Amino acid sequence: MEKKEVKQVIVDSELEGMRLDRYLRKHFKDESLSRIFGAIRAGDVKVNGKKSKENYRLLLEDKITIKNLFQNNYEKSQKTKNKVKKLEIQKNEIEKYKKMVIFENEDFFIVNKAEKIPMHKGTGHKYGLSEVFKKIYKSENINFANRIDFETSGLVIGCKTLKFLRYISEKIRKNEVHKKYFAIVHNGEFKNKKDFKIENYLTTAENRVIVSENPVSRESKKSITYFKYINIDKLKNQKKILDLLGKNKDVSLLDIELITGRKHQIRAQLADKGLFIVGDKKYGIKDGSDRFFLCCYFLSFDEYKFSILDRVFF
Image (tube, rainbow, N blue to C red; front, side, top):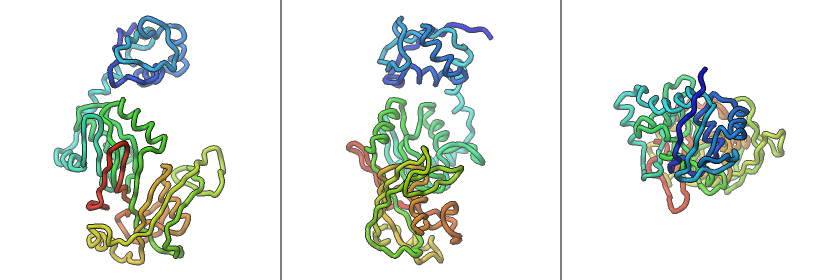
């Protein structure tokens, strides 16, 4: 296959701050890592006419020259921008997703995700939140910084630029994005109605998470969550929620603050204590509920605070 030199790429605000090797991996996805690093070391990739190291952080207006990487891979990465146009979604579906947006500015938008909507396309789903909003905003740069499970409802952060995605991802890594959840749980044998904290280790095994007091492998991650019992009357739509609960009346409402954000953290930790979330078919009990009662109702970072107390579980 013919190799051609790629003309200079000018770094814009979307690429500013990205490592050189990450940029190449993003745009030449079919090339091996060894080939990409080899091209950098050989000088086939230059920044402003000079050889650069793979960890070089791109600056605004930098000029990147790339040669001897497969041109068709670069073209393929550019063509992904047109994929969003080919995705066919009914107009009424588009409008449904638009109504989930509770805030937006030039950098990001906040979505109140409904239950049983995937974050991304996958098994049994032609599209998810990510694909729909790429189509709505006509941009492949749309990404979601935080994820919640398919069954879970609530707030997620949509990023309009790669620059903001990197910014908010770093804040999440530093635990500077605060999230609170409501969960309705079966009372079970756990009769302690006082506030409590769960601190343990979670290890992913296939499609489940295993809870342990100590690490069981290198993959085990320390997980911390705070729980408060509150009166369900605090919820503005509590009458509708009680109707949805149906026969599941021996329940409690928990106000939950995540300190760490692990896969299935709340679900697994509560199940380990015998406090099964109503409607949780993976970690819970057979309760006949077709609704899953876990919702991220509050999210904050920097000077921003978002809450959906009046729309919890709907």
